[in-house]
Length: 244
Ligand code: NDP
Image (tube, rainbow, N blue to C red):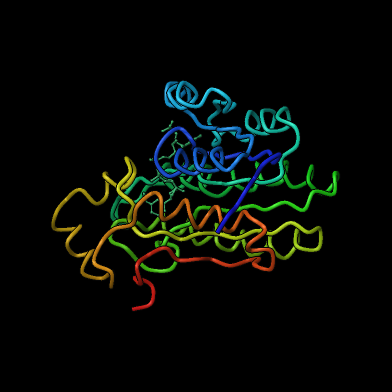
């Protein structure tokens, strides 16, 4: 399937490493002008050293005011990928207020903040854009020590549906992808323990974790015109985990 984003300007958050970096590179390969946003400057600089035409922006998206200022300064976009997130795993009985606030600030509130600015601009300029939120299988299934993270991703799914409903009439589509474990820096924290990994693998019918490229391919499809009637879906990329 030939997909081109030539002439399109796309914002990818959390593009410094992991899945976001993979998304930014693939969209760049497909001809898009990419703005890669993340927190750690050195990660972004390493991306830009490999792909000099990728624009980079460093901001902590947990900071509402600063983020709003930065996004408003970036101008117009044709598409947005809300990928940046944090995952601090702790048992429910030990879950803290600080972890809850930080997780919801980054995983949910920042998506509202960034998407609002980008979508307002799309509406004003009559851009029929597309937004993809990176959610998780954890939004739909209970995983050990993931209470706060799961709750944040379930909130993100609800936000995706509301955005799809309210932005749809403006020709803007909003969808999410909900991956299983993908062995990035984030996943290493929760799934490096062989016992935990074995247990999770036994619940995935395909008996393996996902690859970054498998998430990237779904995001590219959902951003493209090939999915022009798809709006408000939460697409599992989980080898069948949620089907069982
Ligand atoms: P990584 O931790 O590898 O990368 C996350 C990226 O988000 C980094 O570039 C990081 O910046 C950025 N980021 C985190 N917090 C902030 C912040 N406050 N402000 C700006 N940028 C921030 O994670 P993954 O690539 O694994 O995860 C990407 C997405 O996929 C997330 O939404 C995650 O929840 C989701 N997901 C991941 C799964 C997995 O198993 N890996 C499974 C299901 C969903 P910096 O470069 O500074 O670290």
